Length: 374
Image: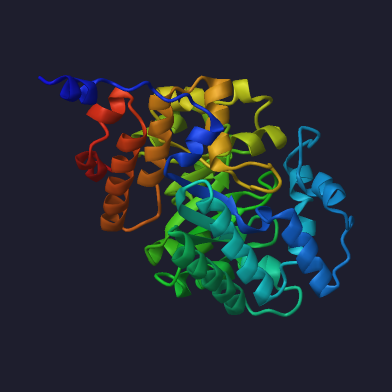
């Protein structure tokens, strides 16, 4: 063997796990709220254009109101910041812009597949029709897809704290836009005192129309909330699921049926779903074998990115590069994409991961054939 060939085959040094390195890896973002992921500068700009009075008109002061640190007390406190973002998202142009910019921001950290969720009912203050709202977001995402090579999908959210009738109307909207940009139906909002089972008719409609289902559950309320999401509403994925470990039998059911968890580390700390990063159950869930995915929830309120969330899993919960690659692959496997599209995308991603890393698991297990084992 020539010296050149031997040099070529010699193992390279494994990369250091930094946020900058993680930005280079292809990733998914499966739990991302449109109205929680604006740029502060965009809020100020759109408020000025629309003559909307904000509680602060200086970027630094406004940032302190919408970027929530550890002073946030609970989920209800966390949700107050949305009053500010929603105040400037009540027309088609603003919805188009925020959707487009969200794709751009995700592309900047090599998110390859993005699912954007929002509740159209929250954007009707100025008389927009629900269809106008969905069309504007679809158009913004479509332009972002074209310019930034990011595949996107929309998740329409019913709202626990409004009423089941409104959720049913939004489910009808999801049915109408199936295969036109909408990939799933969700139930968001405060969990306590607003059980998912009251909205089961909305999910009966979407399930009978073969629409994917994900629910916010087990974030601020116990495993009973997750139980209802799965057994009353037929959840294909669970948003958060932080308190799932309190019911071992339910946890085993979710594990056995490979129902993914949409983990959002930073927002879980802010809403007090977990006390601190080192105590978050992500490590336990992953070690137990659950399909865990990493997401931002709200990029603005949590001042985060997918790369930063992955880095925090490494820094606070000891995730190695092998394990981070698992989390990334789980994200692609959990995407609400048609099977053949998912396999094609995952094969491309696995090839890229092999090129960007030198971990043994990547070389031996993450082959393109593995993409079909979804």
